[in-house]
Amino acid sequence: MGRPAPGKESSRLNGYKNSTFNDRASASAKAKMALLEKFRAKPAPDDPEVLARQAERQAIIDAREARAAERKLAREAQEAEAARLEALKIEEQKRLEAEAALARLEEAKRAAQAAAAAKAARDAKYAARKARR
Image (cartoon, rainbow, N blue to C red; front, top):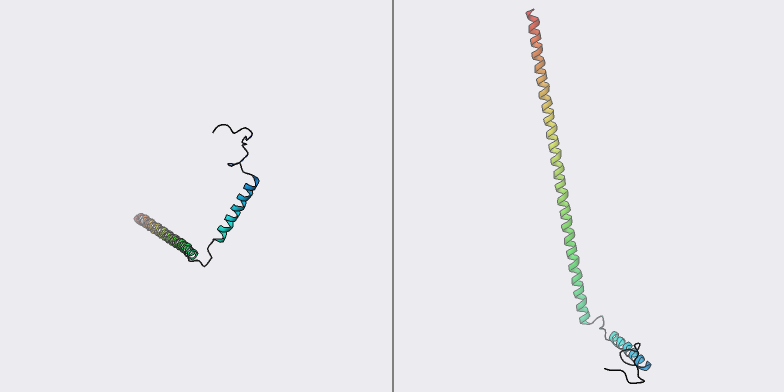
């Protein structure tokens, strides 16, 4: 790989081969024909191979949709369970509040009874003192 022969200097702009316009035009035409042949060689829509690929794609799509439906059902079940637990929590909170209110009411009743008993004792003591005079 030495220097090019005198008078035949290579140019960096030339391609891999030192081709002429006709060579490039024929290569382009061959490439176009190859694309055309590739298109013509495409199997027909009713070809068994094409139908098999379509069936495989449809099976994949069906499986994907089934998984999505399962995920949706699981999510809905989880949301329903969360709502049920929330309702139970609210119900328990209301029950505790009712018990607390009842306890406060009973405490108030006991306090009123104690106050009434104290007043009765005081009144009896006062009446006894009045009776002694």
